[in-house]
Amino acid sequence: MAAGCCGAKKQKLNNHFSPSCCNGNMSNMAQHHNKYLQHPNIYKNGVVVCVEMCFFCFEVLYCHLNQYDPPKSPTFPNDSYPLFVTWKTGNDRRLRGCIGTFNSMNLHSGLREYAITSAFKDSRFSPITREELGKLHVSVSILRHFEDGEDYMDWEIGTHGIRIEFTTEKGSKRTATYLPEVASEQGWDHIKTIDSLLRKGGYKGTITSDVRKGIRLTRYQSEKLTVSYPEYKEHWRSTRNC
Image (cartoon, rainbow, N blue to C red; front, side, top):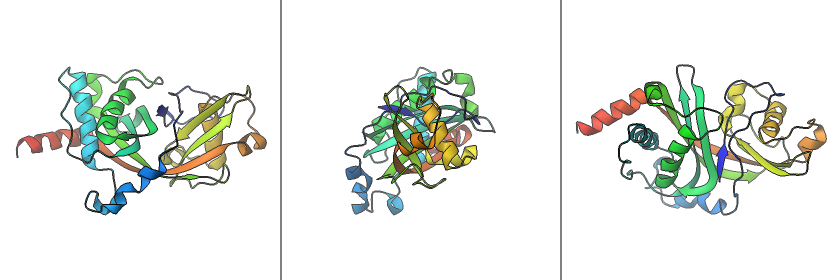
């Protein structure tokens, strides 16, 4: 299930925006988190994310925008992990799209799917255009190390992403998530982050201490790499000159 991950700009906490849905199946994740640490030759120092994943996302977007055939499968491992793809633009790195999944997906098909989904189907933004390519940055986030929090404060800013499950003022069950970098980028403390995430997830009532205490929180960590379009072009040229 797809999930939106971050805010479009510095937010006032009384503002509400409607990102993509944030439901995610958290079952069966634990078996994937450390599966490949038993095989140290597959990943460097046990780190899953690699720069080739970012290059692949650019290749997928470039082919789509220019109506070329989709790129062939990449050479990095095709194991299964939850993942997010984020597009930003310009020197100030304004968000242009961020969607991913909490379900474990094979990296080849997952990155192929969410490179396109985050570029064209994030409901907060218009679809990315061909003219924007030169200003884009792409980030790939591989989500790992999921843990249940004891309460809504049981996570570290800048280290953990958080996914909350809560009940709205009308009794509906909702979920919402922020990747690890969101709180620090926005300059939020724990309370401001939780309150913003409740609004993101659709809570429209008054946010009280009891509302926060009723949250079920899952914390996780993210391996993230970012590549610019000029870096992708240089990579493309170098691989074809070999």
